[in-house]
Amino acid sequence: MAKEIYLKPVKTRRGRPTEYVPVVEDRDVIDGKKVVTNTSKMIKEDPLMTMAFMKGGVDSIPAQELNGQMELINSDTIPAKFNGRENKDAELIKMGFKLGKLVDGDEMFRYCELPTGWKKERDENPLWTYILDENGNQRMSVFYSAAFYDREAFFNLIRRFFVASDFAADGSLDKQYMITDKANEDKPLLVTGFNCRQADYPDDDDGKRAYYRKCDAISDEMDAKMLTYFPNHKDPLAYWGKEGDDIIENSSLRG
Image (cartoon, rainbow, N blue to C red; front, side, top):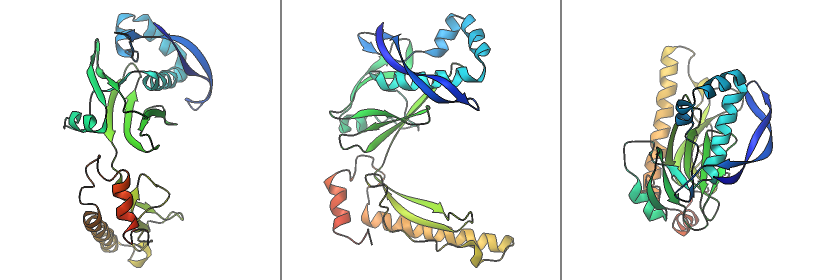
């Protein structure tokens, strides 16, 4: 066992933690490396703990999820499963991850050493954690539900550029499209403006279909522009750093 600091909820609202205090506790260590607690196995080995969680009411599960998030951040592991069918080991190795074996007794996770300068960072939602590169860019999102009855973990690799959309702040379905730059999220590229306007079409089924066709056409145009500027945008290793910066600097992408 090893001493570890995590945040314990002391106040909740509608079943979600709102205030926390730091607590020092013993954490599991296997083969000299820090791992997360296998909450499902823990409950199976000690059924009385199920009763304790149920007695704790709605506060106990959010606390378990938060503790799982903090354990994950402080551990020497990442989820073994990618959120998809592909095996992403080759990409992870190219990014600089040093991949180890599956955790004994908990094959949901594997040992892993992050690339130099990279770190894990918690999200406000305790089910999500991000892995940031040396420049502070989110390069991997990690989902981990530590709730004993619904335990699950997987990761996604984050692309630098992708087409996104949002709706007008007035609550209408007026829609605009842009290319999001994850290295500069506050500076989207090729913003179309709200030129897919619901008010331009009759308020009937034919009008709604015409509105959606217009939005789809604009989205297709943005996909085509994405391929023109960033043909390898689906590769999570592509365009991070100077390569992507140069494309933006030498084009009219920022308008």
